[in-house]
Length: 201
Ligand SMILES: Nc1nc2c(ncn2[C@@H]2O[C@H](COP(=O)(O)OP(=O)(O)OP(=O)(O)O)[C@@H](O)[C@H]2O)c(=O)[nH]1
Ligand SMILES: [Mg+2]
Image 1 (cartoon, helix red, strand yellow):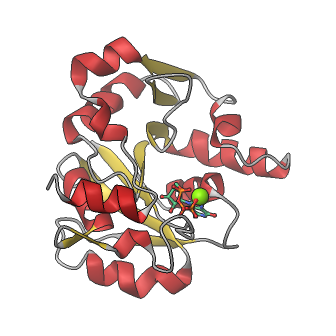
Image 2: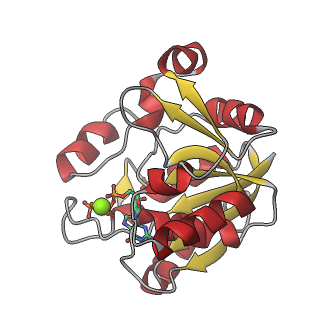
């Protein structure tokens, strides 16, 4: 097992005037759903967010299986890659799974499979289509943390720019299909998507 790093420092602009991380999704804050799935397969938990989100997220996670460690953004709004680097830096494990706070269907058994696939490499990243699912991927914590720093120094903000600096394993569409369903990657951005997803819990 390794660390779970939940990235939650976004502004939820497509969602509206509230922080989607703690929005009530069929009776449970969305981030709590993510964390409750992750705690089945990690032994350490870090939440990355802005300092002003801390109290609400801490309340949403009250009583969950693993007491979260908070890794607040040094500078807000630097993008998810900065958040990933910040979160990974706070971990103690060799490997960590990064999951966005808006992926409430994340499949714990698939996360566990990603940890196995990353062994001996710097990362295991699903690629179900042309896009890498960098916010549901396992990274060697120290390697990705420094790759994020280097990318930021180069003025790059895309998570793949950090990934491309690493020895990474691609988990392709067929391999994904053998271990989970596409639902694991579903991320909720708008209130419409959120309300439609709530019906499925
Ligand atoms: N730390 C940090 N995390 C971020 C930042 N931007 C996005 N994220 C996180 O990255 C993940 C994916 O981001 P989005 O789906 O775009 O979420 P968002 O930015 O809150 O929402 P939009 O404003 O609608 O784009 C979410 O878990 C966000 O919380 C940021 O600037 N800093
Ligand atoms: Mg965004």
